[in-house]
Image (cartoon, rainbow, N blue to C red):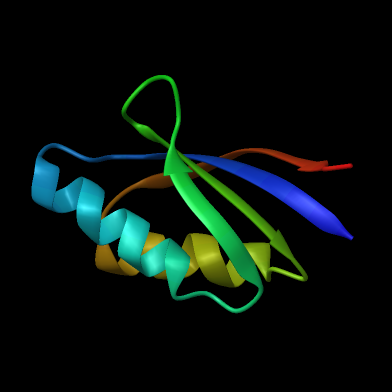
Length: 74
């Protein structure tokens, strides 16, 4: 089942944004990654993504990360 995961990530610069997108893209099961309407949100779409593991790796490699929503995509 495909799901859309939206997370708020503390990104202060362009380098932080690209790092967050790279970390999210490297996770297993991710099919697409993008920035949300506000530049501090990362949207991930994928099938079978381990959400806690993704959030933990973003916190470790980028900075403070909050999980906002996880919803099914049709």
